[in-house]
Image 1: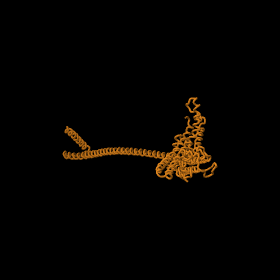
Image 2: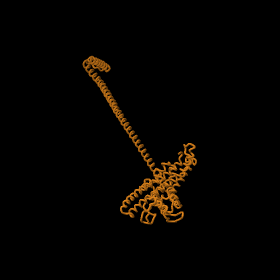
Image 3: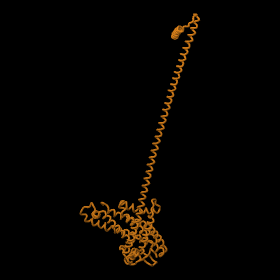
Image 4: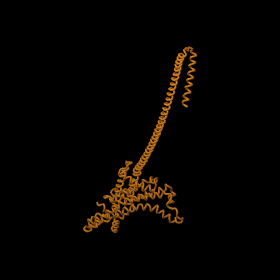
Length: 265
Length: 188
């Protein structure tokens, strides 16, 4: 089965990428709440690889690290130091580190499946994972704020200091929407749309290459070279996007927590 | 091309990518929970333990190095002090030896001069005693000779000892007086 072109069984002609790519047929438990399709399997694989790598990397950590341990430490330190401690400080970073680390590496590994040949779909390109992670982030920063001081958290969130009294009529609804509705929605949609569009772009370029080389033929093959080159470039671009989106997701979660536990805005 | 995408999308029973299916949410949550529990209970604690041990090891090594440095400095100070002591002691010994030498030389000088004085004194005493003896024996012999001579001259034996010795004594006294007067006169 051609993984890139799934919308049609007809081999002649151009196959446009479609939204149906993100809803493949069920593999197991079709029609139940535990239906497993190809994308769910890809996610399981990503989680398995992630846990295997980090289990091997943290199983027997030495004071003087080898090459593999250095790599694992570098990854964990990116979240621990650059995201956690820089934004939250040592104490709070330690509290929220499991959540930040889990979010970062889960997003990263599921993003990377989008450019791995044979998988070719990001685990985050379907709403489930972005939505669950956005909810985790949402619940976490609200929990952090309420745990710190419920009154101060809602006051800082809804009634920012330094605003003349009548202006609160406008500011408070805006703050309410931006903090408690827009934040989780943008978290989820930013990741989802990046990965969906990335996938559609890659499918478009490679399907076009297939079409130019094998269906159109002749001089059209020259265009195929161009579309193949673009496909390769965008594959590299997707690598960047995969890392960047994981970083942004974890960073924003840390920022929201930081804003929630801050004394003043 | 966009048209193609949209027609393809509508053909697929209009699935909305923003509305999650229940299985999608469930499996995503399961994935996240697995990852979270792994990092929370295994990965991050291991990392933390290792980081603590590493910090401890580095601090321990620094403390050890400080201790060694401190000890080395103390030892050096001690050696320097000992060396200075030894030098001072050597100087003292040298000084004392010089003093002793001087004293010995001085003592030797003193004892030598005393000895010389003593020898001189005893020699003078002996000379004096011998002179005295010579004077006494000379006197008696000169007396006897003079008596014999006088006896022969006057033809009369001067057997009266008391008379004889008085004469001799007077003679000698006169002689001595003359002798004493002569050298002092001669010197003048």
